[in-house]
Image (cartoon, rainbow, N blue to C red; front, side, top):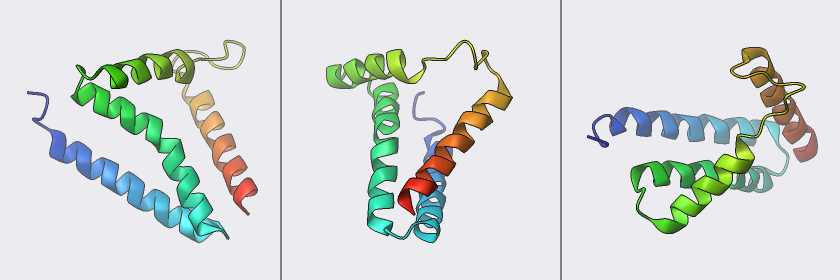
Length: 103
């Protein structure tokens, strides 16, 4: 049951990585540093995805719980639950900071 629609999800993940790599190659002067930073940035999410597929692996469970405590922390003064504006705002800030640092 867990593997029923995995082909659609794998296609989305592949396209996300592919277009992220293309944008990194186009926008950065140091391509390898940009790609390494991108990989380091998505590695925790990849481990969380593996945990959802293989919940009995203890190290993945530990990582998932740790990420859940830190990654999903919300600043109450700026971020209301499910606020689309703040979600896009913080994402845009992160993207512009990454481009500025890598240039």
